[in-house]
Image (cartoon, rainbow over all chains, first blue to last red; front, side, top):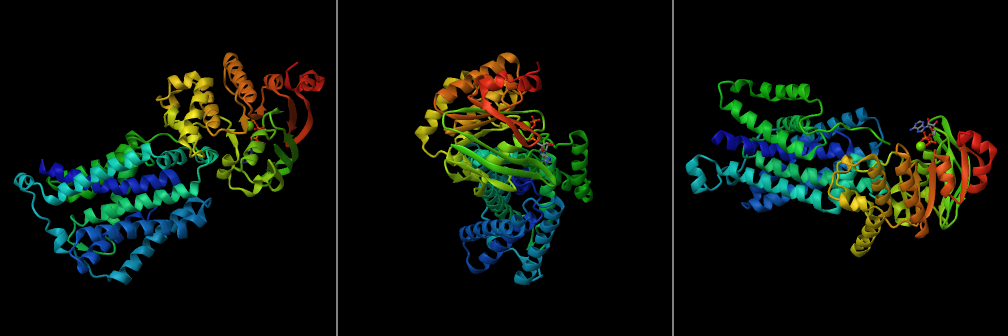
Length: 289
Length: 234
Ligand SMILES: Nc1ncnc2c1ncn2[C@@H]1O[C@H](COP(=O)(O)OP(=O)(O)OP(=O)(O)O)[C@@H](O)[C@H]1O
Ligand SMILES: [Mg+2]
């Protein structure tokens, strides 16, 4: 039971990250391999801010703003000039951006792991949950994760910009005919994806003792796997895939198979793609003008 | 209203449109007919900016469209029902229609346009919460037209609205095109179904491998022996 809650909580972190991959893929038709490193920047933003102030609220705001700006800047500087270039060129650029961010992080934050501040690690215990063995961190992550995902869904379903995002993701040419500025929608998508990465980064700090420049790699690749399992491009798919991998990971860790956790996580991808090549909730997409 | 001046369009090295000029006046229904691969779709895509011409100009009420990004064109009052409908399959009928009105900010105007569309396509009103991909072919064509009409266009471009529809549905769609035209919308109609297109058009242009080879009053073209042989299957 507790393992399950922990799994759901880790899963909602993966889901938040997977949403970034899947939305960018759906709308800009590219894999943003630097997404994991935006999580790292968000996590560092928390750690650094908390070394100056004891207010988590300030740290959270700083992380979200920094990541959003970073995500939009990456898109404008690195990806936008490549619009219409071959997918391979874009992919290589994305990997380059990823290494660039890790390099910059080493320069700015140092390569030594930085311990996560006590304010963040030692959250006040919530009496009732604590009796059940559920940590405050797990509860906070799960509740906030769910709230963020519900808000995202409402935004996409109920606003003009959200509908435009769905339209661009389904048929860019037809969306342009409606008067939708695709570049603007791509910018919005990177901004939202990066803000979600900031939240994922801060929740991920509950899971690890130290912040290091490569901390985004593992959650990044896991969430990417989750996005593919769910069906890349599908928003509900990213959520399902993320939660699934989080639960599987925690269940494995708690079982005698714990040393095979990583292998099991990634084999799940192969098994699911063998059974359903488009991912759990993926659709067959046709390429259009 | 719409003036196309000597446009040339290339796909890589292939010269798909070889200097085409034509004009659509306010209130007219103009048919552009031609066989498969003649370049009809290419011309419409060039007009709405999805493809850039190598040379030539396109004017909508004296504004040069070739200098505008494609997404700005609908704001000038031109809507395009693309070949193959290209409705947003995963969204509901209503969401598709709302996207058609993306260029309009006035809520009351959107409501008015929605009522106009529902009046012409009662079927869409009945199915407004249905996912568009599950509509029948005819309903999808109606949705594509309705979506374009949601932007309140002065001129409507239509690419083969009869494609894949039963004769009964083709009649229904063409009846609605005439009605929309009577309501004051100018229409540029691209069709392979030359007989149908010429029967509702005022004037027509005949396109062959990237060139306009004939033009005239639709009724004259319907009587023209060459047209009858080549396009009306007689
Ligand atoms: N994306 C493309 N790349 C290369 N050539 C193309 C492309 N699109 C169209 N063409 C070529 O341009 C020519 C005109 O095509 P277009 O689609 O405009 O014809 P059409 O008159 O609309 O035909 P149809 O009635 O079959 O729709 C054709 O020879 C076609 O092969
Ligand atoms: Mg065509």
